[in-house]
Length: 288
Image (cartoon, rainbow, N blue to C red; front, side, top):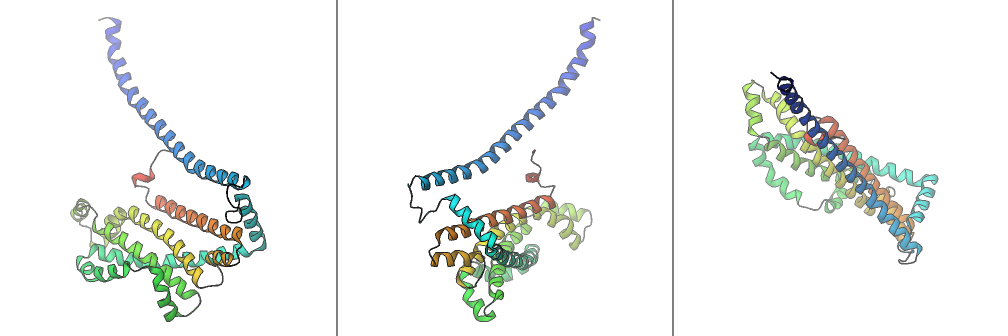
């Protein structure tokens, strides 16, 4: 037997071992490039839009009285922050958003889970809840004002009811559509009804439930801002509305920017919590 013949099997084995590793590294490299491209676009496009806005204002392509330059908005925001007025409004809005979210999400999870696992309960309650669901929630504010009076209660109720319906729908549909194979696997191991909910249905539905929570958070910010437009004497919505009434356009834009940033940060926080609580979900295991 020649030397080449003796070494051939080991060479083949080495090639078969190295080839999958090379393919895996190439796949990881492509994913990393795609992630960096997505991040670059997510940051670069808003910065390019802001730069174009600044240029248009500096060159008088747009009326700076109606569309103040980004630097003017930042300067006004800094003054409001130093004075403490902006921070107070942010705290007031955050309180209403988070408390309303907590109340609405808790109720939505409980009712949605119960209706998702019980066909009888779903048949009994879904028509009524669907009828209320299609009503614009801001239209309920006069009802809450009549029942609860002025103060924080009607605004918290409005945010809570809005969040409830988004979380309820997502939870109910997700629980009801958990693959039957998951249920059969749980039954084959003798899992109780409570154990089925805790160890099978809950983990299977949780990633999608957090999608509903992210949507609910965004809507909570919008509804709270709208409520502060109508009633209240503090909060970011009141800041925007009051600035418009006084034709303080730069201050109005400060409020709009703060609402956008607040919604983005809170939604990102919900997404981060969801990824932390659902490490088994494939969308949270992307190569970074």
